[in-house]
Length: 294
Image 1: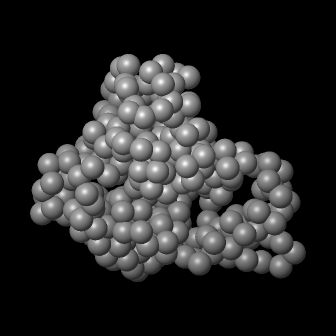
Image 2 (image 1 turned 60 degrees about the vertical axis):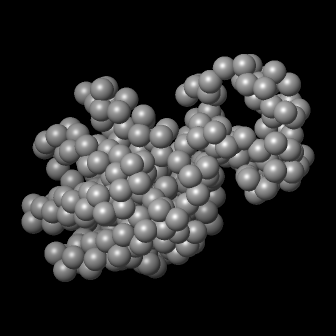
C-alpha cells in the first residue's frame, strides 16, 4: 500500500474516533490541525464521509446524517504499514508452525514466505535481535534463541516501567482528543471477540498487540513504540507457548484488558495502574511457565 494511501486511511479512522467523542472542528484548517495532515487530505476525508452517507456535504459546517458505525472504519489490515504487516505475518507464522528454540531461519526463505524483499526481512530480523529474540549467523541465516527466567524478569521490569509511564501520559490527554474514541472502539472489539472466542481466539494476538501499542503511543516516545513490537513477539506470540488452556488464557487476558480500559475511560488513574500491574503479572507468570516447560 502506498504511504499516502495509508496516511489517508489512518487519518480517516482517527477523524471518526474524534467524532465519537464530539470533537468536530469547524473549519478545514481546524480539521487538518487536529489530524496533523494537509488541508487537501482533510478535504479528501470529508469527501469520503459524504460518499459513505455519513455527512450531507463535504463542506462546513459539517452536517451528520447518522451516527458512525464499525463499517465506516477502514479495517486494521487496510491501514497497516509494510513493517506492521510483516510483524503480524511473522507472529502468526510463529504461532502456527511453532519452531523450537535453536531453529535456523534463512532470509531468502522468509522473504518468499512473506512476499517481501530480502533487505526488508533482514532489517526486520535485525530489529528483533536487539532483544535477544533471534541471533544472526553467517550466510544470511538466523537462530531462534531460548530464554531464561532471569531474561523474563528483566523484560517484565522494563515493560512495567514503560507501560506504567504510558498510563500516566494517558491522563494528560485532552478529553476531546481522538484517543478517547479509539479506546471506546477497542473496548468494543474486546467485548465482541469475547462473545465469539471459540471460533476467533487466534485473532486475540493481533488485538493484544494493538491494545498495548495504543497505550505506549500515548507517550509520544518513538523508542517505547518500537519496544512494543518486540514485546508482542516475545510475550504474546511466544513460539513455545503450550496450546493447553489457550482459550482460558485469552479469556483472562481480555478480562484484564477490559479492566484497564474501563478504568482509563472512568478517568481512574490509580485503578488503571493497578489493573495494568495485575495484567503484566499474569503475562510474566505465563512467560515463566513456558520457560519451565522446556
